[in-house]
Image 1 (cartoon, rainbow, N blue to C red):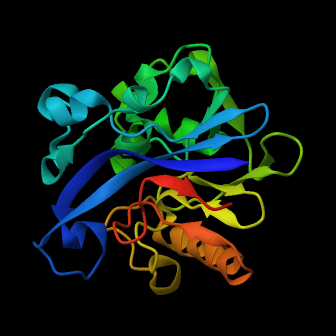
Image 2: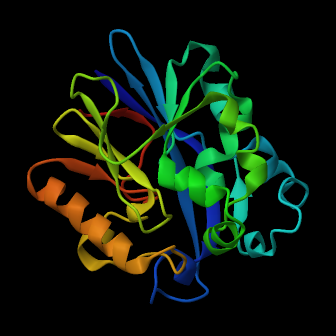
Image 3: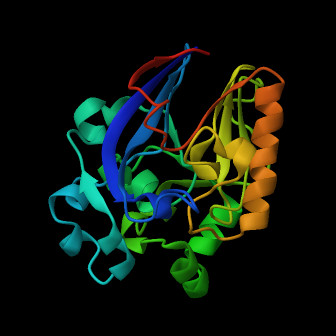
Length: 243
């Protein structure tokens, strides 16, 4: 099994947005990763990154989303610029935030997209949309190719890739265990230290649930796994990832 990290954009915002109690207005630039997992028979993409228009013209792409004015967007290459998306066998989304689901519109409609049912249901609820900064334009056509799962899920049926519900950042956030030694944590924590210090971004659906999810990832790390955080520029480098 082979795993590669791709960089599908950058976000810049005040440090205090990314990590509570950090140095307020100091601007911090963080990477937006996606991962390609290849087995003998599968090419699985984990997250899709930013939509190209998010960087080119965010005001047009996300008209009316005032909170996004806090963020600066950059993208050198979209997911479609880096991969032949027609060769994918499935896509796994950790959650439906714009920096993870923005590239969905670039996918062929035949590629199944795997998501926790709780995440999808929250994304259809007006109150949850407002609370979680979901942007429905990113996933408006997703139901035609959607595969919903409930809780822990053996993706390939052989134990090699497991989806782990890790709610809190959003209601149905999930992480991805690849083999026995790698966990793609998604946005349970933006930074590697978050599994220990619980210094999460200022926005979350449920901070207590997020802390419990961070504890779950910390236990996996302490048992010998490498846990990849969501957006840590000190840790996340494009290229092969050891499995």
